[in-house]
Amino acid sequence: MKDVLKIEGYELLSQKVYQAIKREIVRGILEPGSRLSENNLAKEMNVSRTPIREAMRNLVAEGLVKTSPNKKMTISEVSLIDMKEVLQVRGALEGLAASIAAKKITTEEIKKLEQIVNRMRLYTSIKHLDTYCEIDDKFHELILNICGNKWIIKVRKNLGNFIYRYRFKSLSVPGRLNSSLGEHFKILESLKKQDSAEADRLSKLHMENTIINVLKNVV
Picture 1 (cartoon, rainbow, N blue to C red):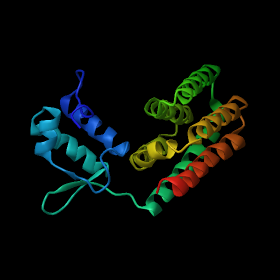
Picture 2: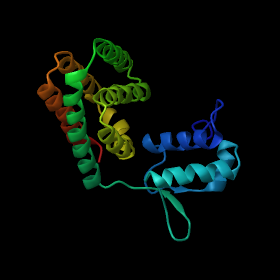
Picture 3: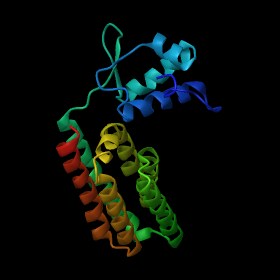
């Protein structure tokens, strides 16, 4: 655990602690139902309890950690129904965002998406899942930003914490990483053609395939 939660760099300490713990929750290293202790975390991360306490407040606010009346903290559990419904909502939102983005995307933005997909292809070939997930985020974030609808962006961001917790395991299923890459490539092609209906359809299909994969292989 000490190496996993190692703190480096010069960000605000509480933010660094928050990011380190969140990363391990998302990756499933800290499993749902696991007990968290401020004292143990402070000792493992070689920090005082103050940044740990602040990080815990952020994680509770995001729904990743829950507290009980006796102030015990545990990793929140996500039900199968919640996961399915969240992914369905994400599919609808990202389909709409891609549809809007297709009408206004610029040549420069297409180039940025192409660069992102090329990086995704690289990390697919070497099966570097952590980095693939990070670049995958950039792909969807860029489409959301091109879309420019602040309400779509806000709601989508709030869904992220539920989505990420199963994504890592989902993409670990043999063959899913290559399928995911292909789906992103097709979305990119629809945006290049400025085909709103196709961008919408493919974005929703990407989420439908994710749901199928999660239900069959992860949960």
